[in-house]
Length: 231
Image (cartoon, rainbow, N blue to C red; front, side, top):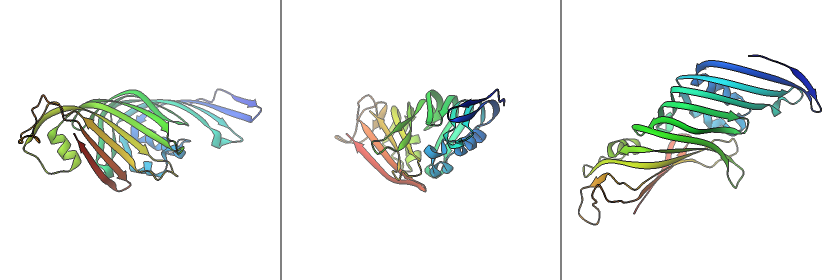
């Protein structure tokens, strides 16, 4: 780390810090939990964990008279990292890409990862709700199989279903200290590639579309509600 200059401005002296660090995603995650981002991440973020190698470039502007107004600007490069929420049985493995963070949130235009058993791409942004809560939003697009969905949703196996299909998913992490809204995961698919070996009107060929939406609400202790909407 370097401290190139200490400047005086109307608001008082400001400490400029530049740092480069190589270590683990777990170390970076611990830093984010204690940084000015903690107001956004909240207490619920203690459920989240990260592992794997990571390198970070960090800039801090620290008003010495008002350290709570610290400005943060950083980029973390992930290589074969992982992110989990064990109580929710969520896991993103082999994560690669760059995660940008400021005192206002997290973002990434493209991450490659494995989710629901297959390689996927993901993007991440921090958004505000009409209630002025901050939400970390993860958008995922990829492929998955019937077996992987059954395993993830913890539902009985359906031998009449087989195949693989494309899907889009959105994970909304409500982690702010004053936000009591459950975090959610929505998975949507046209089910093209999935064969349902049942009599009409329940059955379908692998080439036919049958839009499905799965919506999960999460609490601190795991999934609270699961909703299915099948057309």
